[in-house]
Image (cartoon, rainbow, N blue to C red; front, side):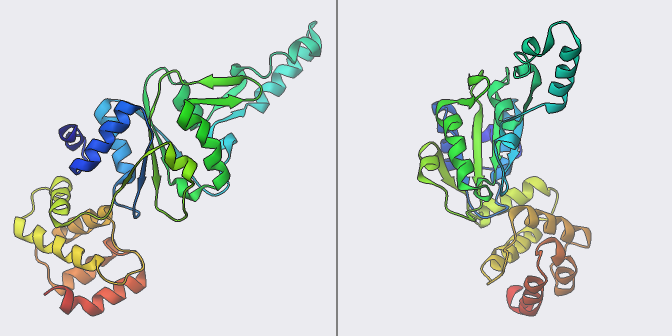
Length: 279
């Protein structure tokens, strides 16, 4: 599985690969926690590519409810049907029996994943941004692989999806949700792993130049910044540095820091500390 993930563009450590294997074999959701930008969402995408599955993504946000996550009735189509039936000989009594059927159902990501005839990967991204009530709503789907729609009853999964939930830990998740998942914390990579990631996504650079860049990034993350650079930002910065000459000197670093640090105060701090950081 580790090689397949690598072939799909994701370099994973052994413990993460084992956790992914167990989630697959035990048919359990996988909860990934860690700082923003360390590869949680990318793991779900790589898992989908590796298994040849379609990725269905549910992006969480404050106020998310079942009408956006599970289903919604197509009210315009229902109204049109009602008007047609009202003009027909059958009348309203006959027509009203048919407006709450699957024909009028708009499937949102969660229901789409459960009713897909082909196995999919369901990514519930940034679950910590949703409300605790939405967590409770998810419990039935994540434990019993089914959902309840009042007008239709219980709908069970046609094929069980691989489920990945990600969290940046902006709030504490409930115990009930955690119990239903396997858990893994993805942290910023160490030097060797970040070197491997850079080599994968920015090939063709001189080894010594890449080592200098990655060492600088690692030092940056130890500083008191508002937002340490993510892995994605690291790769972007390496590419930016390679475009203006493979030499890590203060002027080049200053001109490319916008690819690495996304807050002005962080960039000002690093520029001030450059003589120390580039040693």
